[in-house]
Length: 403
Image 1 (cartoon, rainbow, N blue to C red):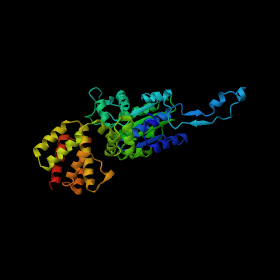
Image 2 (image 1 turned 45 degrees about the horizontal axis):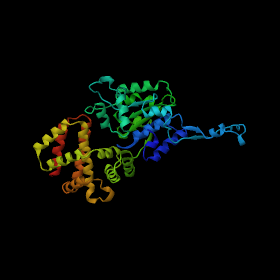
Image 3 (image 1 turned 180 degrees about the vertical axis):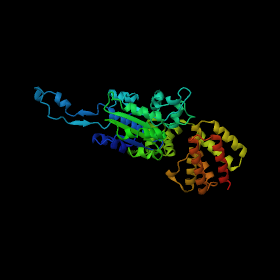
Image 4 (image 1 turned 45 degrees about the vertical axis):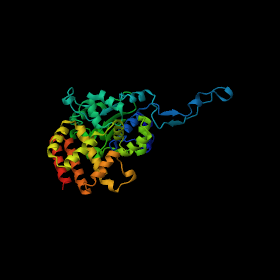
């Protein structure tokens, strides 16, 4: 992954490259971007740039080796050759080739994991899933936590970065670099770090060994310890613009231009969502939410119990997608009566639903419903019983809609 492989975000690339060339590179960087942004991709590209061994080229190399005037003896070399510094990794040196395969010996990875049927206890750490992690990055540098859990087989387990991981971080960075100019530790989603693990790396995060760079990649700074935040330099990575999302869909995924523009507006800068919409023929989460609201409005209590039981048997990601889809549709329902043009980010079926639902759900009701969905999402992420949580939510939504 190089900067050239990432569409847009030129201002962030410029900021990072300038910090290296001006020798003002912080030893701990925190890349902050919303879900579906390029924060992980930028981290990969920046690590590749730092480890590239072919960034500096002599601008006078050809003149030094060339013949003298009129074919005579070579002219003497200038006292100091001018040096041209590349604004991106070369992509062809041994270091870049290893980075392309995510196998550079001086780049270390930490990411949330959980126990599986084959990996349990203290063995549930990042290095136990490195093969799956390389596969995950190879598929897309814009993948979500749900996609990662599904890939390594821990989709129904609570993920975290354990205390044992902090010992591995310290042990890895105390070793001398093997071949690269830097030792780089990339921590993906540090908001899932156990407090004991976070406290365990504070000293090395503040005073790392020489030529050591920490790159933390997060979606939510509010979930990070203040002591972690205070030891890192913030790098804000905005969401993709609609034009950038459409360009990626057209050029990299061969989506027709008209469809790509529609999907980009619907995804609202979230590239993960745009790719999901582009590959799925129908949105099952939308149909589930629509039918769920119909049951709530009609007070079909026995069917709501069955609905909660069925959803409780599904994976955590399906439950999360349902609630997130509901939050998005509630937002559109709230905006619909006053929106026009770019504010409306719905396709035909969803737009028809928002039009009908806005007649039932007043702005105050939408606010209460969104609060309840967010609260249930919070409970599910902390291993609440999904059947009980979703049934309780259904009964409360029924009460709001029929008030």
